[in-house]
Length: 110
Length: 347
Image (tube, rainbow over all chains, first blue to last red; front, top):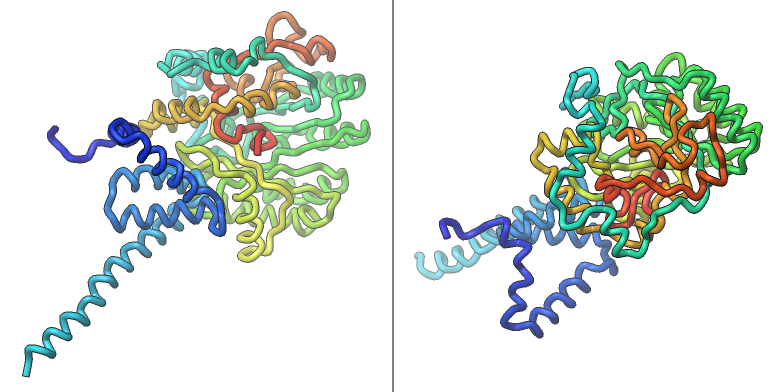
């Protein structure tokens, strides 16, 4: 295999149930329940999934949830804002660790 | 913003319905539409009644939308002649068909649009006008909202998105703003506010994907359009883009054709198939020919030869039980929540 990611692998996801069918069944049922409308709408959940997909940088999830977001009625403007939320949290998460850096600097410095 | 013209004007090969049919039927699919219906126990696939007479007045339109299944535009000259309009009215006079659904093109541009509406309403028929909204801004037609309201015509207006960029990408530059003006003019005469003046919106996806859940989207749109533009409407209908005509051109040019067809086939939903609009609708072309739906009309797939094939030979009983002509494009009406001129067919 010349590359790690292939979009043709996405439909093969259920093959993860081959060696562990019970675990796959449980995962599938839980996954489906998570994305059903509840206190949040299916559209809102898809936008969260899209943002998380970018935070964890999963190309399969980005592929799947870009389409799902469109099919749940979101537009490119809303989806871009969701990605910015992910990026802001990732950026802020790095930056807030700077406080730890400052602790170390204060501990080690005169 | 991309602009387009009709396939016919560009002498595009897809302007020929035979070529579209050839492409659709030649596409390798997991199963064809007839096999899908067979597996659902729906063959032979027949009409059950004629509740709606859908009249396509012609292909002239002031817009040239990229997804248009009619290949309509300002350059198109096909227009229903007076004798066909008269024949349609004779059908309404004699047959117990409760609803007249008027479409195009922009049907309001037809010289007999107002006469047709007036006479159909006088016959007590429910009349629907499929309106592109920007036609209401044309100087010659600025009294249309008042006319439609006076005759209690139900307006079904196209608006693909609450996002300007998306709307203009599908329908042309400036159409979003023009559509909002049109909606405000309809609201101003009572549409969407007076219970007797129904204003429904139609949304088609702006791209190669399926429409959102109709009920969820309607709630969001009502809130958004009220909050941002003080616009009211009654219902939102979602319609799946049919892989024919200019949307077929878009699918092929963008490299989305195979994956879109696969998506439609995989999303085949038997209850949606059982409830498709062609089972209780009859479509009349500008030249008086009869079709099972507006999509078949554009693919030049007339009603089966065993029944009258023009409005001049209309026979209610035979046509109400006709065998419906199907093809792989029909997967567009049976995917997910289903799709029809009245939106999703299953909840």
